[in-house]
Length: 277
Figure 1 (cartoon, helix red, strand yellow):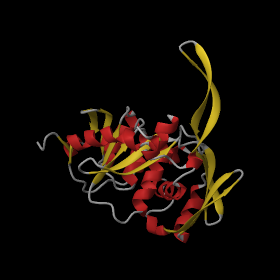
Figure 2: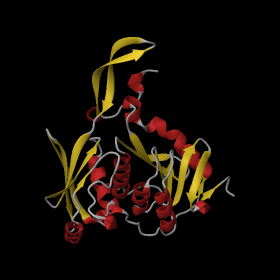
Figure 3: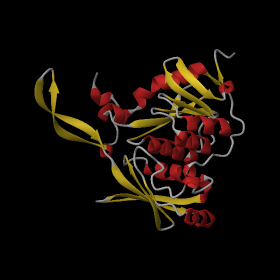
């Protein structure tokens, strides 16, 4: 295959480094591509709120998605401006939000320092740790074959994973299983926030859809998915007990271990159909 014809990720999201590797008992010097992981500061109305470690692309999507899924704003329309700047230390996304939302943000008294493995770092109280999303209303049914089709198509759309082997992805798929949007990041929460931001900022997504993630489905992945009104979350790995509880309460269908035509449905199985049964 001519690699010049294969889509490549943006250059700033990875770098080539010299490494020594061992193959069949022999050392050799090669170059390896590794994913970038940089500090990304989120600033609301001129006030710093959170610093997350993330892959430095789609940062406006990331900031908008984080704002919605963390309850900083209720809708994307309450974000009046979003601008990203860079420096030697990292990136800053400057958001201007509605005054009522900014007042609520100050009342939260949260000072997050994000990690790629946990989105709850820095939460000040147990009351803030688990936030149930509003119950979903509506949401159609989906053919299980569409879910399998979407999962099968994930790998070919993960450009940064193909180069580095080090990133997660979150994809929004149409009802027939076509991948309409996909976002990648070194952090699974970040990838989903990027996708959420792209969803709430887009004005021309077709009809019903569902989300597929390349990681396990923890509580936060369910909460973030439901917060943008998506009624089906499909994970290629396992789920947690709290994720199932929140999905059940929110009216979200949660599927884990989605591989090939197989999967386990942990909540609201009535939304997923086999051969239009």
